[in-house]
Length: 112
Length: 112
DNA sequence: ATTCGTTATATTTGTTAGGACATAACGCAT
DNA sequence: ATGCGTTATGTCCTAACAAATATAACGAAT
Image 1 (cartoon, rainbow over the protein chains, first blue to last red):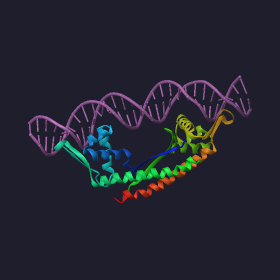
Image 2: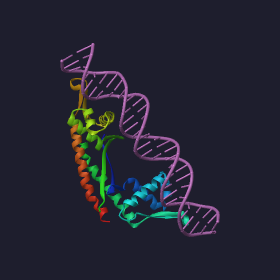
Image 3: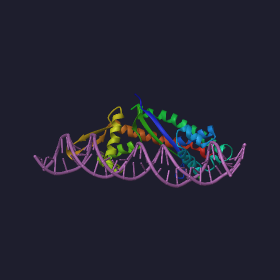
Image 4: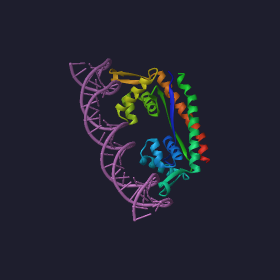
């Protein structure tokens, strides 16, 4: 039986968390549904939690990550900015690279 | 202002956590003090929590990580096995390498 | 003006993780 | 045989965190 190695990475901007796995999931769901409330439903989390996460993301990012609109056709909605899309892609890439890197490093332990 | 990247890594053995940062801290403190209760004190955690962590480590490891003795001179004590020492060293090395790797990867985001 | 679905926010309720406390068992030393 | 400091566990309580509920504000469309 071999050990497994797992990891969590996140990106901070002066003490505040900008992105982590949960926030990236949320951003992807927003991209797919066009709405924060729909995104929360697909992720099975409360709207409030989703809103808090998104709020925190936008407050700690250098540029806006989403554009949120209240009222209007369909009641409003949320969508990713180009910057937001780039962040999601970059995070996914880093995360995937990290997994591969760690899997190699794990030999140091499985060979003990 | 640049973003920072942070990470947590841990090693699992069929669903159970074997090692993480907290457990490695504990093992190091045991190595230094020769006792689980003293280690708990230096880490400012309760003895019970320390014991639960250590118990979980030993239960999920392939070979014993510590030798614990009850009673006798000084009341007993705990010390790392050679396997335990190797695990701690390997974990530290992997963790350090991971930080360096991620710092390089972070450019993907800071350049956006 | 009213309806609609959304964003935005406060308040209350529930749940779970951790801390505090208590106690037993052990074996060496005196 | 008694005391000592440790490992080993169980029980209770609380405090932090998450979930549920409620409500306001908004703007387009009818």
